[in-house]
Image (cartoon, rainbow, N blue to C red; front, side):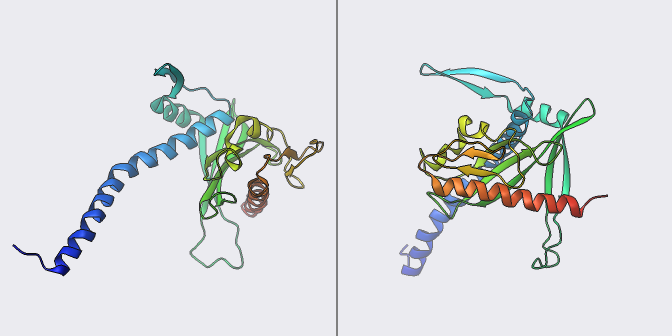
Length: 227
């Protein structure tokens, strides 16, 4: 059977499309699970809530593998999720309002902190991709309890260093008012100052803006939904 040119073209374009679609259906659940576990693990880590990990070794390299089932169990047992409607904004069209998930941890009946996820466009290697942060604050809503990087495509070795514990630990206990400030080439003296990432000015400024803008919106939403 001789195929016409149009039929051949259709087959050539359809086969790769079918393969990509099949790959999507195979990988999509795994990607979704990865993001789910990473978020829940980040919440538990910031609140210092322990979960089970297994020690593994491959080719002589030792590492710890998180127990997904235990992470889910510990998360559900300890973390309360509330929703916070967005504050009305003049430019926001009716029906486009979203709800923010608030992750809360209570210990002995006392609130230990509140966290939420914020996502903005990146600043470094790939400005078209998102930076996603989990920001957690103390009950006073003005002190950082911790931050975690959930997703980014910043330049490895530069902006990508935002994932390093040394950088993230700086934010613990820092004050968010009047605003957080990432300083360069000087000592951090203010209660709201942390060191910027060396060689990654755009990413550092981006993180600063993301946190300050997210907190401004968060305070507005909390005020609007009082009572």
